Structure formats: C-alpha cells, structure tokens
Amino acid sequence: MAFDGTLNNQGVGAGFILTSPTGDQFKHAIHLNFLTTNNIVEYEGLLIGIRAAVALGVKRLIVRGNSELVANQV
Image (cartoon, rainbow, N blue to C red; front, top):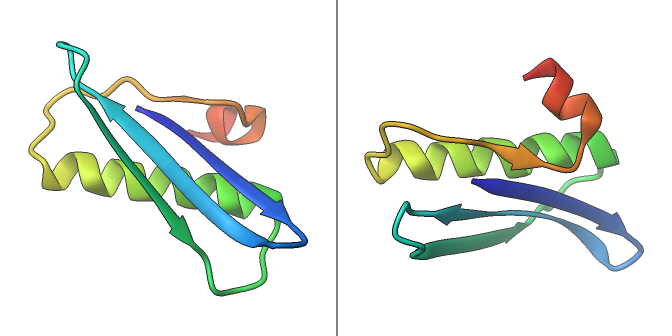
C-alpha cells in the first residue's frame, strides 16, 4: 500500500493505492472537510488505506509513504 496526503489552498485530501501481488490496483482518494496540518493529512491517508485493506480481507500489508514522521511513528 502506498499512501499520501495533500494540503493546499484548494483544499485537503488523502488517498492510497493498494496493489495486489499480481499487480492489480485499488485506488481511492477522499476530500477532508476539516482544517488540519500536513502531518494529519498523511495519517488520514494511512488510516483509510489500512481500513480498506482490512475490509478487503488483506492478510499481509507492506506500507509505503513519503512522510518520515508518519513512517517513524508507525
């Protein structure tokens, strides 16, 4: 799973891509309707991705993101 978030003057959003071992992908993005920081947006991307993986019955998950703070805390 790869996750990311974005915070700019046009709004706040987070998303993820789940990739199966065979290369199939499930992509999803959301718009967040609250004021936040860039780090929280990154966490939201991670959380929605993990929730989707659990809902899809994923048993093993490798997570990648570009936020050093989130990666070090998780």
